[in-house]
Length: 316
Image (cartoon, rainbow, N blue to C red; front, side, top):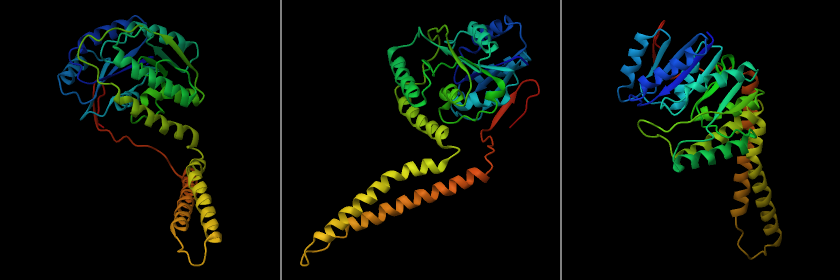
């Protein structure tokens, strides 16, 4: 299999047929063997029956159906799990990404890049959608050091052997390219066509900035301290060590300067003991975490229930 096309869908009943027509037309023009994986993320409209109908009509279409809404990241991960292609392309199901850009993405994959990211330079969205994206992209670039203009663009192409080893959760599909880059993968960003939304409404807004920030902190921790957790816990313990030293110094000073007839306060000695315990606790946790990393087995299991339709379909 040359190309796997993964599309997450959530309440996109109006766009499914048009999406299928555009994607198949673009994929057939590539003159490569392909499969289309439509992941229904627990839609509450007629998306699911429409996807089932496409599976019955076209053997190249595979449907993956979640029992409830898990989010776009989980849907993309499910698509990766069932993709068989040498290259995996992802795009949104709202018809804003242009499938005619498939050839451009594959061209750069053939040049040796591991991931090719679409950049919606002329984005056809309202300012209320563009502003959170600008803020999020700058946060991602600042914390990861990977200057990608448009991490939120779902239109991307990946080498299949790389994404099949990826384990995504939370909102981390946006950070897959920076994470791959920091792990040594070669990335390329190309300008792609972007179109105005035809059906429905966006499911994202300013609230995602906070989620992006929290996920960025998690990614920074994973990238920097996964193989050396003692360093991470040591860094977390530094404020408690400083607090211990300050509280101890104040306690000693008050002990040496207090007059015999004055009451002796236990506030700062108590703070010293509490901070010292917190410091020691974090250091011990770091040592145990280091042992777990060295001798543990981190094989992850898929906890999301999904039903797969299509040739050779199965339940998991």
